[in-house]
Amino acid sequence: MSLSAILSEAFYFFRNHLLQLAALALPILLVQVGIQLWLGAEFAAMDPKAPQIGTPHVLAALLLFLVFSLLIASLTLFMELRTEGYQPSILSVLKDSLPFLPWLMVAGIFSGMAIAAPVVILSTLGPLGVIGLGISLYLFARLSYVNFMVVVERLSPLQAIKASFVFSQHVTGRTLLVLLLYFPLVLLGSVISASVEHAPVILRLVVESITGFISLYVNVALFRLYRVSRQPA
Image 1 (cartoon, rainbow, N blue to C red):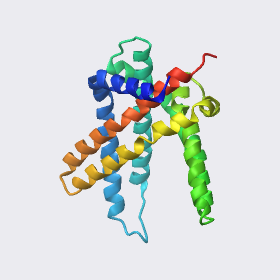
Image 2: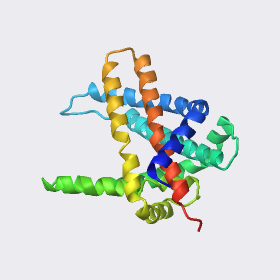
Image 3: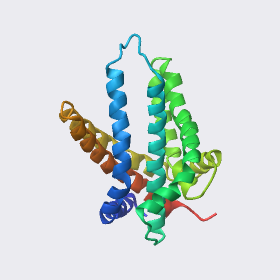
């Protein structure tokens, strides 16, 4: 299937399930963005030369990671069930997503470290940082399916990382093209966030949650690419 067909199917899925996706994802995004706004305000108020990072900040960061993992788990499970023809309730999706959180968090830590390592290490060598960035982007594409391997195929974190790397070798180019959709969405989100920077917190919370919701289209497109490309074991 061509990439344009995959993106079209992802768009139709997103449009046809808009209300269900909003009911599932927006409450989680409101919590996620709320934590991000609080952490941002806290760090902005710190002395950059001597930041005082305390237990509340660490706990908030851990909670943020947990909430993000819940968002990914529930979204992936919802897409899988709807693709299989089921009509799950929002509460059942959230409930059934919980067992995946520990594995998703562990897989996220390992894959995140693998993706960040090249750019972090090579950035210390000056111009080689550009090469490191390229390697990191390549690894990001190769490991973009880890979450699907955990939730859909019930693999352990290390198995999911290996399976994603093997699976993506034939769809790396198309995966990169799908991931490139993040750039205009992030740019749009940045412009919108800047326009409401001095607005009341509640308005910023709602606006940034909505822009985050729109960016979930990329996840839907990646899932569709995964589904049409995955060969039965």
